[in-house]
Length: 84
Image (cartoon, rainbow, N blue to C red):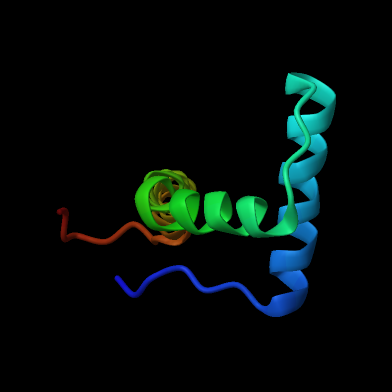
């Protein structure tokens, strides 16, 4: 998997969220550089866990949908002398 890359605009939004979190929840002010540094750490070291979880969730949804499609196809099947 390639590393997670964000555009400048995405980094700006995410770093503001990190700065706001630190200020509101931890009552600690951090600068833009520290917020971007933390964002890079999260992206590189922790992001893959969230990425994988998203893949697992997508796979589960796809399996459920495919199961519905298979059932729908069986419902369309006509009776013949041949049985599976």
